Image (cartoon, rainbow, N blue to C red; front, side, top):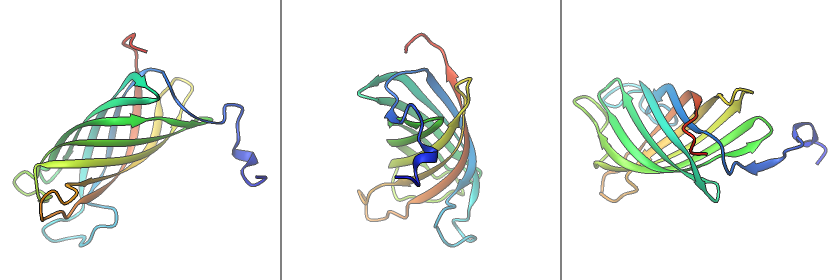
Length: 167
């Protein structure tokens, strides 16, 4: 207990039940975390990710919509659910999503169009509500077809709080 005392705060660990919607933008590497080979038909390539997280939540769970694109022509649109778990100014955000993936002309073949997306982000929240963080993500078809190579991503993100009056 004494080892964790310096990290404790008056607020403690809690699920954020309400607040603004967020627009998150991230840059990073597609096929880059724990995937080999580094070169060849499926190299590590740059990617961008944009995500909208709704302000409306039920029991701390909100809706998320996102787009991912990489420099090899791979593209994914997805929707799903997220939650924000806060500890002082740190926010942990797990996401479970699903959507459609297109490898493009030179992108990595993930085995099917229908794919699942899992994310885990950790961000520092500033006084203005903005969040700077890192995110890891995994795309997989969960073997709904025989080929499921999957891919992993690592991104640096910044999330902008939005005010639409739907808090």
